[in-house]
Image (cartoon, rainbow, N blue to C red; front, side, top):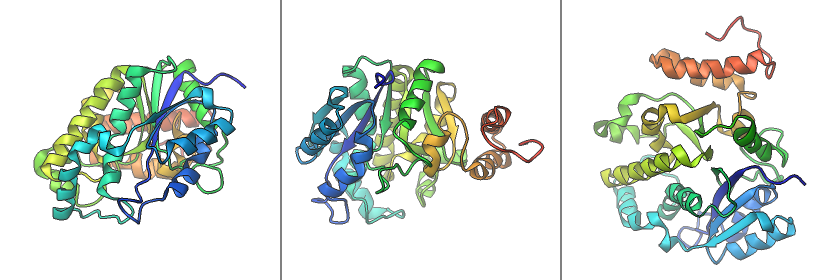
Length: 316
């Protein structure tokens, strides 16, 4: 087997069923994380005493234990936990995107992913140059991943190899999901912003070099605190609206929908109609020409390199 790519992936697995019976049980968590545990990459896994032992056993069965670090830390000891009372208060007052599958504790873990990655960059257990986050519960029940079509276990290593060795990118790489009105960056429009879930980025998978990753992750933590104290914020992906502008030159953008994150991470290859109509054309219609040009060039690259069929004369 080839050595893993020069990137440490980070994830977290916590049993939240004790906080809400609508959340996954430990057994369900372990089933959904199992495909991730089979991938030959450097992996740091954060979890609790109820999840880490079984995860370690499964990773050992896959002969990947030497590429893995397990960090057992309870929910109450996470950086974001200090904001749990305010999150609960917010949800009683204003939660139009209510989802019974989530709870305040799951929101805390979701928003703590920025701190998980920062902590891992600091300790760098495998001495890699790049770091990435991947959500734990991506299993589709058939040993595949919900974020990829035609998935096999070489997909993620291939992406990481391309990003760290071939492309040699030192940017923060994340997938853009849609176009949103920039007015929502302003505090006076936050309540309207959180009236419904706005599709901004696919936060379940991103890869970064420590610079600019550390400063972007720090800013994401600031936005989490600011938004929470304003009384909003349920899920972390909408925090990226500010990030996409504030760190425009530091971000490498992919384009696409959730189901094709891995397929499109290096360049658009799947669900191209979505990329074209929902992202590229929406940028154009909104008058965001920098974003439009970058998205258009990404799709043009796939066309020029015969990665996708294209029967239109151009994509303008």
